[in-house]
Amino acid sequence: MKRVLSAFFCAILSLLVLTSHPRAQPDSCILGAFTLPILGGPGDAPVLPATMQGKPVALYYSTTVDGLYGGDIAAYSGRDTGTYTTIVQDGAQISDAPLMKTGELKLGTLDLGTVSMVRLPQFPMRSVGLRPVVGVIGAHQFDGLAVLMDIPHSAFAFIRFSADKSCEGAAARFPGPGETHLPLDAEHRAQITLHGVRRSLALDPNAAFNTLPATWMTTPDMKKDRNVSGDWPAPPSPRDETITLPAIPEIAGTAFHLQGSAGSGSSGDDSRGVLGQVFFEHHVVLFDYPNHVVHFLPSRHQRSGEGSALRFPHTLRNEGEDLMIRPPSGTWPLTPTYSGAGIQPGLN
Image (cartoon, rainbow, N blue to C red):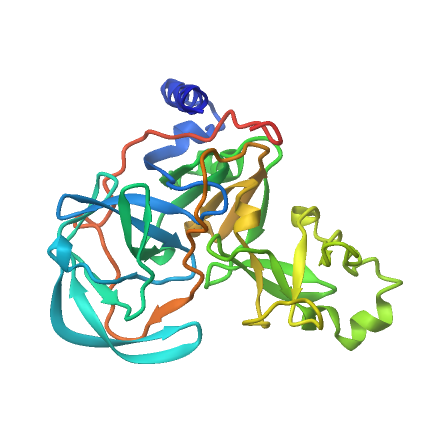
């Protein structure tokens, strides 16, 4: 596995010396990038290596969290500020959530400084290898960048693409042939049209499964026209009780569980659709946040090692003061070290 990843990254790095063409290629349109390994194994959500006050730790990376949250960090020079904020967790408001100050925090070698963290009273303390997972950091911290989540190859990257006109479409070309994409809304959810109705799918690698609300499948118009329009989902399999959406080519082969349907065994929020961890395990995913698009490419590559069901399946939103982590110079100090060119659909 190490040999495969080494060859993979060597091939990628060699592309960065190529000269620009009239229509710039993705590698020449990357102004900066910062790469990290994704820790854990099959079935785990993205867990990123970090240090706090020089000690090795790890953080969940979540697309449904708006800041930095965690548990007790006293062992890492974390301190209680004596102030509180109000947060919303999974739709329920929690008042008087303590605000902490971390010790010096680095994500890989990317220095985030001493930052504010909301302490959660029941944060699940887990470990990946010898690293304790002390918190969760949200994608909203980096929405000025493109974020690569390549779970099949255990690779993660922050990328800054050039806004030059010659680089239009560079993010779309970045994953390689076979790329498909969907627009993102203001909450970073993928937009689909299901039977003429605009719907939003959360892109959440911390959710175990792909799910759709059963109510999306039971509107009067759908019942009336299901045999005519061709827009109706493929019927559930008797064995696994899943459906597919053949009318949406970007995700036509993706199986969903119906949430909230009788006998589905699903519970929780039945108002949103989710592309979950099982989707991310089989796709290279590039979130182009500045242009409000998500790109993905199917992958047959499988993560090595053993997973521990490491996931943080919660939504968190801070309703108090702005606690976003911002780079000291206005832009993250990225260096050009990653390009996705060369990934072959269905082979990697």
